[in-house]
Length: 569
Image: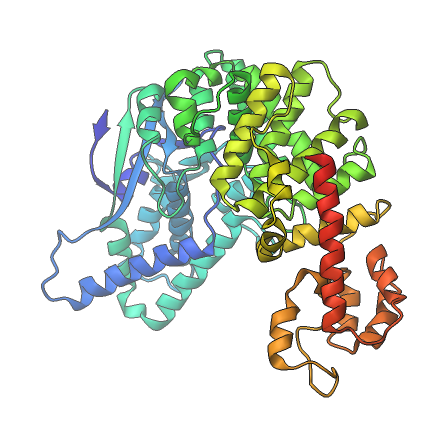
């Protein structure tokens, strides 16, 4: 292993190539991280220029890069940790080259920096003294094809028009170009000193290993600047390192890339969920199969130490089941699983408003329990009783003790019981909670779960209710005037506004139209709703919505939900 502090110029212009391998995560630095990097560099530069005590030894440390020598090409370093940093620095140096080489800023005393920046980006032919623009130092195999093309385009001689691209490569390159323009416009006389500082004063710590195993070991202990490695990044590296066959390695990298791409919401670029989520689910599936109800450990520790450290070695099985999990949760998240009947989908919709998403764990386990036992998870006789029992259990437990730890214990008990004897035993007497005289008071105190209660009440009372988008409507409005609401005062309004009996589901558009209007006028808007409860309220015989009406609806919701709990726990 070689560890030798270098300037960024020495590292990038060393003549070696840098390969970001398939198993790495996609480039993810956004403008916020680039802004921080630029400001740090500018502050360092200004301090060195203004401080008379500064010396040639002053440096700005950018962090480390971990790599190992590619066995097929001794002149190529495969980056294990630091790809975000190396890629961003390459974009910065490409922007600097572009500006230094432009006619607007080119001058005799700084023309040498054009070649200096170029050598950090491309191979340099000593004989012809020319840059080989078709041989960039940086190559990435991890990104989606469209992004890879943009990176290649930026690292070519003629970039062309990339202003319309949504790629982070393009956005960050344009950002650096704009910042360089701003600097030169305001401090043209300092351009040469700035180039010298960028090339010689920015230092990095390259850690060059002689094999992948050593590099991976260091990889698991380091973070990128501002972008900590996720647990799934570590797991990805572990799986990749454990595969011996080259074709299998390539197949794994391709599969991982495919799974990552499926998680992206096309319209927004956000993700339905992250890869970590799938491996958390798989951890609990593994625990359930091994009848393990012990305390939960961190994801990274689970897969790398102790009795489960060899789970990842069966990479084909792991990736196959991870893919199944992804398909399951994407179909549930999107409400696009045609095998789920309306009542089962209603239960899932209700669970999404539960105060913790830990509930998903047992659903994942139950899916694989059914698969392992040759049962049909989606069959109405299996999924619906499971979901109703699960919803009732979670809600009653939350009313009694709204603790995440208590919920975890229930879930661990249930999935061990499931694999041990085929029964969903949560290990707690919920009927005892329901018969306790304090249960009703606790029910109305748990405001964090009110949205889930309102959702469940809607589906229990109206079993034919379709799944539609909406938001919580305050029947007595959040903004009100004494002149409009006879019998109300500020103290009463504050007391009753957030009570469960004053809330129901309504489409956002209709909610806006209803606004803070008088109840009698709101009813006309409710008639147009797809929510059956809103349409029923449109037929309410009174045009006033009073404290008594809220109290009456409080009681009706409680009675309806308690009956559901008693029937299903």
